[in-house]
Image 1 (cartoon, rainbow, N blue to C red):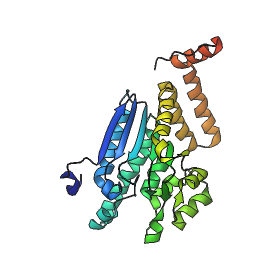
Image 2: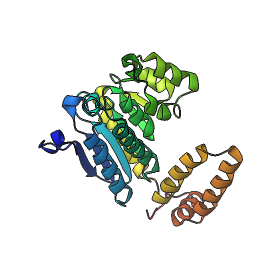
Image 3: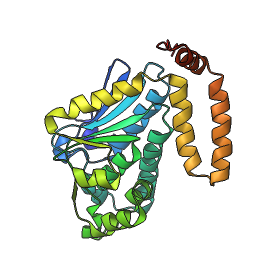
Image 4: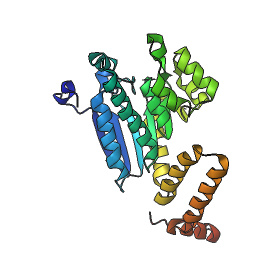
Length: 265
């Protein structure tokens, strides 16, 4: 943890858990929740713990204060102008972003305010995103002479190529409705409806059988990296195994019997 934050009384990351839904809140409101070295490390540790927690069914990523996340902490980066440290920090951040997709639980970004640069990358790296109407999104590093290279990796896997190029090289902010049209967020709601919308989606996911969600999420991302024929082979094997899972057997039998299923997990 950075020395300036190690001495602070407030943790840079908060965790709350209720009814199988864990919420991680970026807690650097005065810095617009910029991703400091300490915050990245705490996120890595929290995601590792959540992945091993069988009580957690869904994870929500949120931000304290006015912003969701303003990207990397530029002040911290300027205080340590060292290429080796930069590479190591970005590797740790990339590992954290990839941990979101490797996590067995679905991850929802709760975006209430601005999400820029690596903050936009964080939204793109979550499985789902719900945005408040005032939220705004940008990869505006290009305006400072700094191309948002690491955010580009996540954005080009969420958006169509020309849309991603415009966002990365134009450096302009887009509103929540435009972000939804681009495919960066799933739903846009009024500010006073954000918690209800995130909660409803989280509870819907939390009610699904654990093994189907775990295997399905892993397959979802794995097949995206493969040629279509290999994707189908992988998917067929996953589906065959899934059909023999106790919850799948119960679900199919309940459907055929026209009764509600009674899932064990």
